[in-house]
Image 1: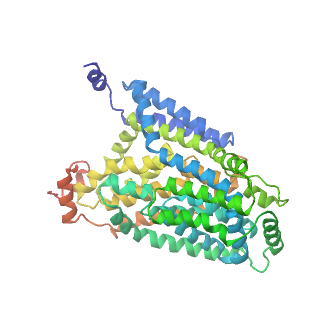
Image 2: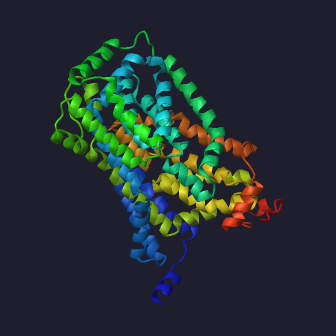
Length: 503
């Protein structure tokens, strides 16, 4: 009886109250990032969580209820945190084994500087498509590509932009990816129909990005004047400090094969750690205690070449702790916003303003982006808009495939472009962009990750023109009826006068 009274006493926040924790958090975050010039968003997000908690208490929630919402979202995203831990181990061990140095060595000797950016994007796309994890791709192949780009004297942010474009785009269309499965799950569609419906934005975006990287390669980089002296110095240093062999690519190949066979990502990545450890002992003479240190604290070497040292002195679980702590705080903030109903109130206010399919599709994309921006969690930016907008699409008679594409692009693809988001924090850490150390210019990777933001733009154009915006089929309507899905026939009043939907 007491529990019932407690629940009934809880109020839903109005729009103004719901905006308070969001606005105040963004203000504190802005002061930290732009006024103090300190890129450590952890405490501002923690303050935001505290503000949201106070709002929840004001609404009648107990701290236990708010805590439950915080830990629920963190629990849902723990597999991704586990991936971060595995990626930290794999980076340290693969450097020690010579796998990463071999990738850098062959890349410098085989690739042309002019085609490097375009090739980097394609390679990361293929690896992410195979692995089903953009983070795994960024932390392994992406790291090696950063070394190759440095050897070619290509600005760090250009290489990072190409790596991010490829890695997150491959993740977006991989049936093995967690976000690619989450988007259709929350909207009531199937994963392969979802992937097929993303092709009208995926293919043009990739072609546009590929063309830009190719043109940039031939425009910005003069192959004849490229610093071959520097390239030779890097390859010589790698050859002197590591055994370089094509056999050392086997740990990476093993992970890809396991992923293709649909093994879960965590066992697949850990198998890569073990394979790298065996390779390090056989080819580089590493001892067991050294490997345990590399897996935990990262690899350390002094080759005398600063470019190589800055790339290879990294990895290990501890190197991921800055990112993991940020992810956990950001997830907790997002969970508190969801539990208190603040995000729901903001989205509901948006839904009362939009009219027609154009407005709803645009709002769905922008809501996913905004949730990414505020909550710092790509999963919440997919799950929350997906759950809330789906009944409107059904009521308008449009396939929810439109919605799953919108939230995938506003969620998965925009995540790495927001520095305090889980995706952006990982990219900055894994690629060694050094933003926290004052290298703010490397944030230029954000506009240079063309594929990530061009795709949502194309999707918005389709929404305005009606192109590639399928209506619900009879089979889909029957599925809604069979599954008892909610159909909102009054949420967007002007839209349903002309379209009566009977299911």
